[in-house]
Image 1 (cartoon, rainbow, N blue to C red):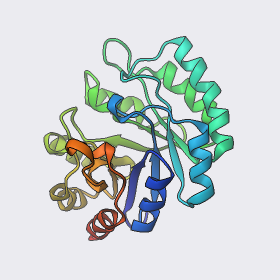
Image 2: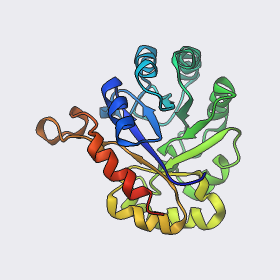
Image 3: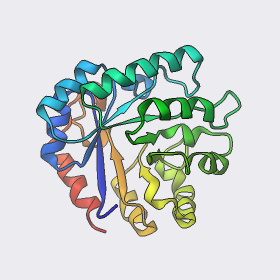
Length: 232
């Protein structure tokens, strides 16, 4: 990666157009942020593709947890074809077993389903029983573009030590830092050698009752983050 990458969560066309206007490089397309981000409809992906030129990394997740049943995987594999045809440039997924280890069988099933498109392993890695072992399991999987991680289930502020360790271990190019990411964290992460950043609520109007997800993406806030992450 040359320069820094800024990925913005988009729920709809309005978010996507605003993110592009603010200088984002890439979108993560999700639905239902109350559940932490689930698979969007193909109609949403197609509508965004018509109005926005940014690549769409589309979430593949059916519920708020990180485990997958055979039925879940069958449904997500069916979704892949429709979402790819609608304009997905890549996908976001990743699974844990009931005991908190990376579910390689489930994850590899979707890697094969989305191939040759790239994919991001999402923040399931931060919820693993052994984060270091989870990274060892994930980092060499095929077509892996990035790992969305805060270093801790409690957010970037609590996970800076883990993120530094990952960067020092040579995984900096894989880290997509997000999940409680604040502006104050960016200079620290840039110093570690991390160059990819993922924002959602931080670039939105506060919306009703202070809920960031009820307000739209604000291009001015995206521009602020663009300037910040480019200070490498």
